[in-house]
Image (cartoon, rainbow, N blue to C red):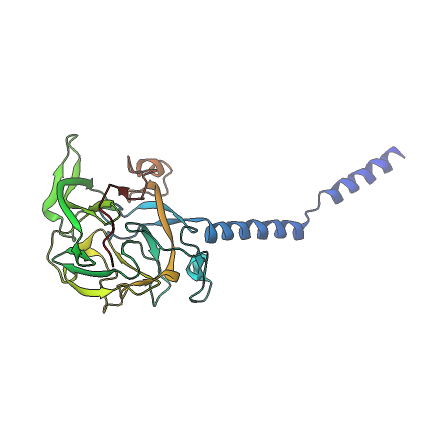
Length: 291
């Protein structure tokens, strides 16, 4: 009898150990849905693939983009799964100096640019200087800054070839001439603009209602709202429903040497960039000019 009872108990134990695959799949689906919802409506990671926002953002920077500051729209939905529409929920307008994530008007491709003009503003660019509502935006020359010189930041092909140097520690760096630009609300940040190129001059337009005008901080190499004719550019002011979020801070930055070797996951981290805020500093300014 003991042997029979033991056999029955073992059979019962094996039955109890059977996996409930339906429950497992349901749990996994709910978890993925929760991640998708967070990614779409709260925040998502973002990778910097180009030099258009130098010197403030470098290739290899990883950011957090918040989805809610301007409300939600079709471009908020992750992976661009929603059809393009003009609806907005709890919509609001970006502020001067915000770094935003506009979606290209013709392709499901995310860009990252800075807002320099708001709905109703008149904007032009003359010799590289923004003219906003008839008033030149302040630009002041600042000392050159040292950017990393590494696999993700080569200091070549962008007019910086002559700026390779060594810092006090003997490390090779890229010394880039910069300007400090300050918008009417006091938002201030650094820009690069030392080359004469076509987009340094842009005839005045009025930003339509429900749109903003964006530019990259690397004015010499940014396909932004100034680029009206080339498909790489943003083809003018950006509809607010095409803005998928606001860049908040850098989580970490990689120098381009990451490999399958776990040691490189640490050695490829750039120092001093983690947790850097991407919100512009604000200085006291005169009232915003009338539009």
